[in-house]
Image (cartoon, rainbow, N blue to C red; front, side, top):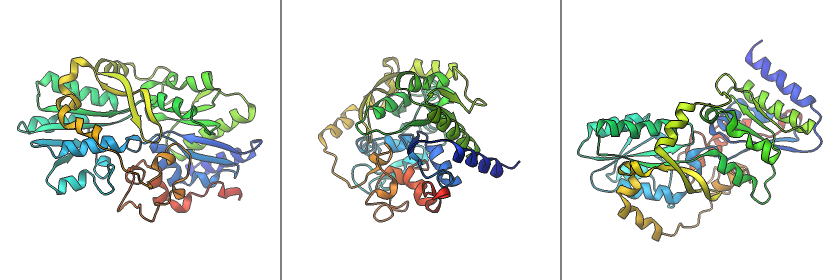
Length: 370
């Protein structure tokens, strides 16, 4: 049977489930967001089933103050910013001000494809202070930790990390404690699951009675996860199911976890749309402080505390918390487009706004039975 036929059969099975009222499910992975949009999954679901995007895009949850700090660092003499491509066009608190613009103004900004590439960039440019922007969740944290250890072992002294790394669990706990939060089940991120394992999501049913399914990334994977979530809801039997067992084990990648714990410590940090969350960020431990860009450039970064973030009509924070659809933002497709983005949700390849903009004709919720 072809993948398309299997997906269609799953959609039919979902339509037969006895659901007693509207159901809202949330994915917390940017790759899921894009896959759902690209595959037209929303249009395959019954009208009472609604999918919401959560805080699963690491670029999107980074607050504008942090981007402002990055832009300040980029303009320092002899500094080279090494970053993943998604960060190049993410605006700070001023619309249109991003690393791409700063590069046009003379900043030395280079796109790398891995954290180890950033270390190699430092090796090849001994006259520059190379600052790597570490962005992501637990998926990219081990590789970033490896870059710091590589730089230390090789004696590379002109490399530092500006850590924007965050962890998923504290954000989900905060989200569920938000007033008006109305979600009946979670599609858990498979990529993060490969690192933290099934046990990393066990708190959802155990502490909150929330159905949860770890999902893969093909259309069939996602529809199967949705089916299992709705089955749990219809039976009123919340549990954690692993539908991505080909990549996610019970305990996850223990070696990667140990590397993260060796290099990073958990601390509080700000999230776009969610505010300040305790134990949600990964910052370098004291023994690796030499490689901490925030310590090395403390005088430069102290200026950001004095700047107020101006108001913007961008509603990215509400979009990534499931409080509104991208189309409901007053700037969507008007002032905010991929060519001239106002918020990170339109910039990132994992952003909900970018997904709807690119695959808009597939986005209607419940179109199949409408």
